[in-house]
Image (cartoon, rainbow, N blue to C red):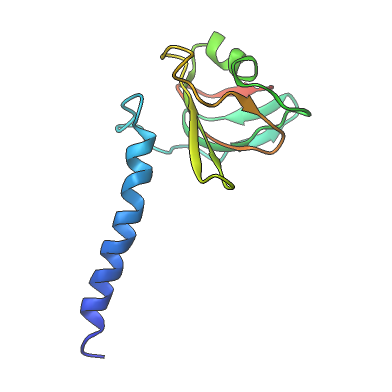
Length: 129
């Protein structure tokens, strides 16, 4: 096992290379580099989905597909949505919705039940899409 150490180093480099594109993608439209994942995980509550300040990994709980701008409107109106990301497992593409950019730039157009979202919000809020 004398040669195991270089292989471990190679594995670490490969894993780091895989992680870099995701971190770059998450900061593509806005600088959220100082954000931290804090608080307990998001959870479904009687009034909707409890989101906590920072990053949340949540399913879209609507009962039918909806326009993303309509679904995010309560969060945008409250001034708490920083950005939302969705990864399509079939196309392997990330799409995003950022309320601070022109609508033409937002490529996350539709949310469907159980789409998993990575959302960054400024403060705790219950989201009921």
